[in-house]
Every structure is written in structure tokens, then in C-alpha cells.
Image (cartoon, rainbow, N blue to C red; front, side, top):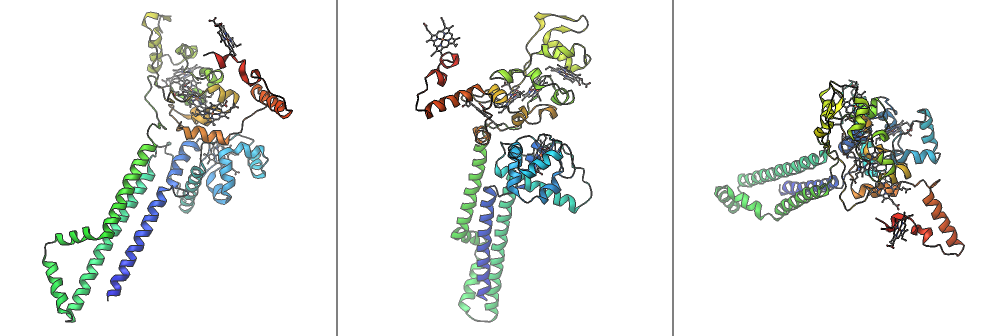
Length: 423
Ligand code: HEC
Ligand code: HEC
Ligand code: HEC
Ligand code: HEC
Ligand code: HEC
Ligand code: HEC
């Protein structure tokens, strides 16, 4: 009979082990976390893709489920243009099939992120193709932050409940065994002890539990892991404002202006092409159109008020004008230097690579995390376009001199550029 109890002990031990591993597993971002993938997919891909049907790009459910070469898919998603440039036959085929439309480059997605997205697409496709009822899953890119946290908490809950059940069962078995022994009339001494124990107040087994080293150890481990994960997530996301979308003084719709009307970003953010700052347009730019467009809208009247413009007399009163206080969304700390023209003009990176599908946003939100990791990951993955670029031509010249055993002058290294000596 003892053996029964022993088996249980062993069983509980293995449950503990499995639970611990499972817990550690979720912490290490188990490969292919569909919940995380869903959030990423909804924020980055739904502008052009659906799982079940074709939008701008192909329907991804069937395609991704049938394409088993994850390495290829990862490369494609991170930088499809590099694959096309390298004349990868699969990439070229799909590119031509879709009339050479360009898919966005997602250099900021890590291999893990892509695995999560693929896991989500496959799971979603499996669910959708299993249940043909077309669920109208047209939710806007909902802010789904923290499914992983929910996962961790529910897992912890399950572990604790499983452990309690095991403890209770173990106790029941022990009692049953004692009764058996008692009925057989053997070992009178032990029964007497057993009864005595049961008569002591109920707190006794709690005390026993507290003396159970394995149990205390388990609780301590759980507690430490819990606090650790909590603290880690908290610190990791400190000062990261991905998804930040403040209420602006005027509800300026980018989807209308940059999307439906296809006004070029440059029309309003010309700074991005020639200077460090992209800059927000002055209200006079709006007046080019809104002097006559939507003059009755209360939102447009906010423009008039700020400019001191009276739509009836069509006159400006400069004494009444005040600056429009747009709330800044993207904001790097002062210790980091970021230059738009270097990226947009020289690096030829599209605004959307960093700012997301602005042309579909009702109101702009911060799309990228803007962390140092984000900058560096892209720098590691993006090849520079060195052709027709004076800077790189100069570098080539320097290398040629070095190769020929000559030494380049300071001037060749940029020593006569005004900006190197003057603020
Ligand atoms: C700006 C629109 C756009 C966005 C955003 C976009 N795609 Fe695409 N995608 C396309 C187009 C267009 C194609 C078809 C191929 C082509 O023309 O380049 C495509 C093709 C694909 C393919 C097929 C590749 C192959 O070889 O069969 C996959 C997989 C894919 N996209 C995944 C994604 C994922 C994942 C995301 C989000 C991270 C995403 N796409 C975001 C437009 C987009
Ligand atoms: C008609 C003018 C206009 C056009 C066209 C336009 N924008 Fe804007 N943009 C604004 C205004 C005004 C704001 C400030 C209000 C706001 O944040 O919504 C702004 C804000 C932004 C911001 C957030 C700035 C911050 O505070 O961090 C980004 C990013 C942005 N625009 C990107 C783009 C991109 C990319 C395009 C092209 C696809 C574009 N804009 C086209 C007028 C325009
Ligand atoms: C090239 C012309 C053009 C420029 C420049 C322009 N808009 Fe517009 N805007 C329009 C048009 C056209 C509509 C109306 C679309 C429609 O019929 O709903 C509109 C609609 C709007 C609306 C929605 C009004 C409502 O009640 O639905 C707001 C708000 C707005 N614009 C703000 C701005 C601001 C702020 C700027 C300057 C940063 C600006 N627009 C620059 C053409 C322009
Ligand atoms: C390589 C990534 C990247 C690209 C490409 C990019 N931006 Fe930005 N953008 C940023 C970062 C980072 C900030 C925050 C800068 C800061 O706080 O100093 C920013 C800030 C902005 C702002 C807020 C005002 C400002 O000047 O700081 C606007 C508006 C903006 N970007 C528009 C654009 C437009 C329009 C384009 C395309 C022509 C573009 N961006 C391309 C990364 C990028
Ligand atoms: C989407 C990819 C991408 C992202 C994101 C990005 N960069 Fe870049 N960055 C580039 C490319 C490409 C170049 C090279 C452009 C060239 O040819 O000079 C570059 C160049 C630079 C340079 C000039 C380096 C040199 O030696 O001249 C600086 C500084 C820089 N980036 C800062 C940043 C910072 C800060 C961030 C994050 C806030 C950032 N970048 C995010 C792609 C990116
Ligand atoms: C190698 C460093 C260096 C470079 C490159 C350089 N300068 Fe200067 N510049 C100086 C110094 C040092 C002074 C101060 C000399 C003095 O006070 O007599 C100066 C002075 C000046 C002044 C006079 C300022 C005054 O208050 O009198 C002007 C204007 C000027 N530079 C413009 C330029 C321009 C434009 C370029 C680019 C074509 C340039 N500099 C490149 C180092 C440099």
C-alpha cells in the first residue's frame, strides 16, 4: 500500500518539474507565441494582408501554412527587397505575380517576432479553415498588450492549483492507508498516534506544510520567479512609448490627407528630406485648402481661431493669433541624435518603415519602439546604397589611396566640411 503513496510522490515531483520548465519556457518567449504574433500582425501587416483573403498582398493563411521553409519566410518578411535583388526564384515569382508591388521592409522585426507572426497566421488559418463559418473578425488593430502576461499568470495559477490538488490527494491517501492498517488491527501503536494527530487542532497540518522543505522551496521559487518576471517586464518597458497616441488639439486625419487624397508626406513634412527634423507644418499650409474646403467644420474653425482668421470677412487679425499646440508623439531623449535626411534622403528609407502605415491612421500613433535596440537592429540588417553618393565615393577614393600605399589627407577625411569645425 505504501507504494501507492510513493507513486503519488513521484508523480507530484514530475509535475513540479514539468511546470517549472513550462514556466521558464514562456519566460524565454517560447518559439512562436501566437498571441504576440497576433498583435504584431494586426499592427504591421493588416494594411495589406488578411489571413483568409487577398487584399493588397496575397492571403497569408494558406500560403504560409503550405510554405514550410521558415527561413525563407523570415528573410522575406524582414527584407523582401533584398531577396528580390538577389534574384531568389520564389521571391521574384511572387513579386511578378503581384505586379511588382513593393511590400514594406520590416527590418525591425527580430527572428522571434517573425516566428510569432507565422505561428499566429498558421493557428488562425487552422481555426478558420476548421470552422468555415466566416467570423467577422474585422476588429480594428486593437491594442493587445500583455497576452504574455495573462499567459504567465494563468500558468502560475494552474501550477498552484495542481500542487494543492496533489497535496490534498496525498493526504487523503495517507488517511486511507492508515484506516486500512487500523482495520487490519495491526500496529496498534501507530493508530493511536494517528488518532492523536487528528485530534490536535487543524493548524497542525499547516505547520507541517511549513516544515515541508520541498513545499517551502517550491513556494519560494514561484515567488522569486514571479517577482523577477514582474520586475523585468516593468523595467524593460520603462520609457518605451510604442502605441502612444495623445489627443491632439485638432483631430487631423492622416488617412484622409495622406491616404485618400494622396498628398505626399513631403508637402507637409518637407524637413524630413533636407534636415534633422521632419517638422510639423504651419497652419498656413492647411489654409492653402481649408480657406475654401470644409469651412463649416468645427475642427477647421480651430485652425481659423488659431490664425485669427475670420471666415466671414476673410481677413486675418494677427493680434488674435496663437501657435497651435500639437502634442509631440515621437520623442527621443536628448542624448541620442537622429537625423531624418540621413535616413530618408541618403538611406532612401520610406517613412512607413519607421512610422508605420501613417496613410491609414485616423490619428497618428507611435508605431516603432524607438529604443536603441530598434535603431541598431536596423543598422545591422540594412545595406547602404553607396551608388551616386559623394560620401561613399570619397571613401572609395580613400581606400584606393591606402591600397596604393599613399596616405589620404585630413581634407579627404572630411576636414574641410564646415560642420566639422563649426556648430
Ligand atoms: C504595404 C503593403 C504590405 C505590408 C504592410 C505587408 N505586406 Fe506582405 N506582401 C505585400 C505584397 C504586395 C506581396 C506580394 C509580393 C510583392 O509584390 O512583393 C506580399 C507578399 C507577402 C508574402 C508572400 C511571400 C512569398 O514568397 O510567397 C508573405 C509571407 C508576406 N507578404 C508576409 C507579410 C507579413 C508577415 C507582413 C507584416 C509583418 C506583411 N507581409 C506586410 C504587401 C505588404
Ligand atoms: C496635410 C498635411 C500632412 C500630410 C500630407 C502628412 N502629415 Fe504627418 N502630420 C501633419 C500634422 C498637422 C501633424 C501633427 C498632428 C498629429 O500628430 O496628428 C502630423 C504628424 C505626423 C507624425 C507624428 C509627429 C510627432 O508628433 O511625433 C508623423 C510620424 C507623421 N505626421 C508622418 C507623416 C507621414 C509618413 C506622411 C505621409 C504618408 C504624412 N505625415 C503626411 C500633417 C501632415
Ligand atoms: C491639399 C488640400 C488640403 C490641405 C493642405 C489640408 N487639407 Fe484638411 N482636408 C482637405 C479636404 C479636401 C478635406 C475634406 C475631405 C472630406 O470631404 O471629408 C479635409 C478634411 C480635413 C479635416 C476633417 C474635417 C471634418 O470635419 O471632417 C480636418 C480636421 C483637416 N482637414 C485638417 C487639416 C489640417 C490641420 C491641415 C494642415 C496641417 C490640413 N487639413 C491640410 C484638404 C486639405
Ligand atoms: C529611420 C527611421 C525613420 C524614418 C525613415 C522616418 N522617421 Fe520620422 N521620426 C523618426 C524618429 C526616431 C523620430 C523622433 C526624433 C526625435 O525625437 O528627435 C521621428 C520623428 C518624426 C516627426 C516628429 C517631428 C520631428 O521632426 O521630430 C515627424 C513629423 C516625422 N518623424 C515624420 C516623418 C516623415 C514624413 C518621414 C518620411 C519622409 C519620416 N518621418 C521618416 C524615425 C524615422
Ligand atoms: C529602418 C532602418 C533604420 C532605422 C530604424 C534606423 N536607422 Fe539609422 N541608418 C539607417 C541607414 C540605412 C543608414 C545609412 C545611411 C547612409 O547611407 O548614410 C543610417 C545611418 C545612421 C547614422 C549615420 C551613421 C554614419 O556613419 O554616418 C546615424 C547617426 C543613425 N543612422 C542614427 C539612427 C538612430 C539614432 C536611430 C534610432 C532612433 C536609427 N538610426 C534608426 C537605417 C536605419
Ligand atoms: C578645420 C576647421 C574649419 C573648417 C573646415 C571651416 N572653418 Fe570656418 N573657421 C574656423 C576657425 C578656427 C575660425 C575662427 C578663426 C578666427 O577667429 O580667426 C573660423 C571662422 C569662420 C568664419 C568667421 C566667423 C567670424 O566670427 O568671423 C566664418 C564665416 C567661417 N569660418 C565659415 C566657414 C565656412 C562657410 C566653412 C565651410 C566652407 C568653414 N568655415 C570651414 C575653422 C574652420
